[in-house]
Image 1 (cartoon, chains in turn purple, brown):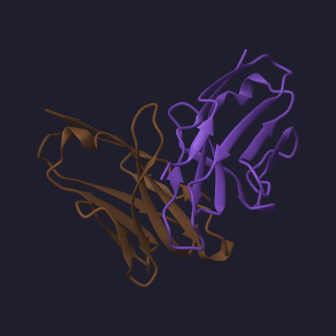
Image 2 (cartoon, chains in turn yellow, cyan):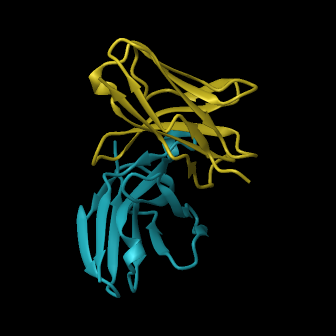
Length: 114
Length: 112
């Protein structure tokens, strides 16, 4: 039973380019969460999705960031026109839902904007 | 608001004990604990639910004071492998979803 799969592990983008981060949840998990982590800091909530639905995007910046979890395929976190401040580790987690279950985290995508 | 963890950092020798605390200003449905080693993903340790249920590793113990909205993680007879940063994650009652808001983190270092 594979865990949460994130790819790519490392992503380098020039300022102004687009970054696409992918996350496949654990088998049987229908809840997906994205978090951002700066070096030596904590995990900041970005967005919570279920299949074809955004449940809570209160942590997403209003511009340039979007997320989806289509009926088929992985969840995608998309950052348009990246800036240096977007450089961070982006972690995806999944849970079987509803409340009362722990998260399983993916290995993360380290985004570097040059 | 982000839950507050204390202490910020702990240094131990193998075999010593430590307690890490997590405090929220909001009513909680559950508290989760995770450990993250440098450059790696956070790993689930345990969950404490409102009403007293607990799920997690047998060797880890924790408590959840529902009246005070506080949780404590107890690390006994520490091993080198316990080193890492510990995060509590809280599910708030008023959010009505299972998204977690993570605490500020506690860095634990265990030396031989």
